[in-house]
Length: 290
Ligand code: C2E
Ligand code: MG
Ligand code: MG
Ligand code: MG
Image (cartoon, rainbow, N blue to C red; front, top):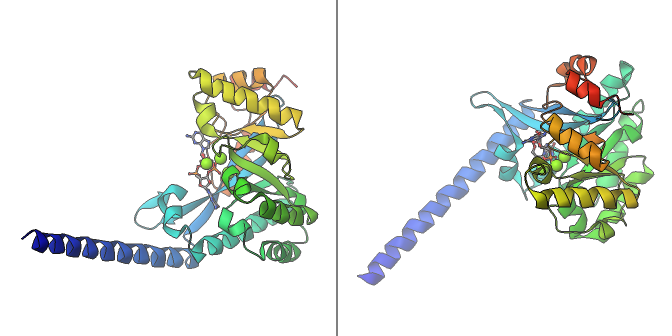
């Protein structure tokens, strides 16, 4: 009987797994359709210098405008395509959109640096640089220096030699690099120092709790200190309040991004937002410090 039950259980598990594979397959098919039918779009979140009030750039963040489910965040769909060729397809699509947007801003006389998130698998494809070069060639009006690629700390550290090769090649094209989610990858700035990275973005998890958690405060403080020592610019992610901004400025970190400054928004909302920033007297007071 035990054997019988065992077999039943196994059979059950098997069917369950089959179903999961089937569901994943359908989700991926749906994503391919979404990409082809223009359901994906980029939102833009401003990056500012809190001490001068200057908008230093924007980060492009992918969204899926699902006809039934509404606006979906990357956490809802990036896991579906992770470690599949779709990850690279999406990456190529995002790069193309980014260049189109930069071109549109260029025509309006806006030289706004644009950051794009690059998945590790995409960065490490063998023809990443030649493809990027070809893309840049199709948008000759866009200065490549306005394009910044955000690479996860974990990705840069996974294979430093390969990451260095890719980055060096892209740097030769004029493109810049930032390290994203710094502090979550358990690496040290000593290793990162080898890479041609201009900007270090400290992960929002540390910034969010820095006012209440002494350990997080210590991490933020030491990352700022080290980044300065190595001559790299440093940006705090997840700045949700003026209190965060004040604490960061006191530590010498001027660049920031976060809901307290602006939420990610569609491209057409960005000009209005820029015209109205700094939005409150509290932010204006900080922005007089330069
Ligand atoms: P990330 O690159 O670290 O982007 C920052 C994320 O934090 C964004 O979430 C942003 O909306 C959110 N955020 C910004 N300020 C605040 C704040 O003050 N508080 C809080 N709680 N959150 C804040 P989002 O747009 O959901 O993106 C999540 C992640 O998905 C990104 O993290 C990035 O790793 C990935 N991602 C987004 N767009 C793309 C893309 O085009 N390609 C790739 N490969 N990955 C992307
Ligand atoms: Mg990012
Ligand atoms: Mg980040
Ligand atoms: Mg993140």
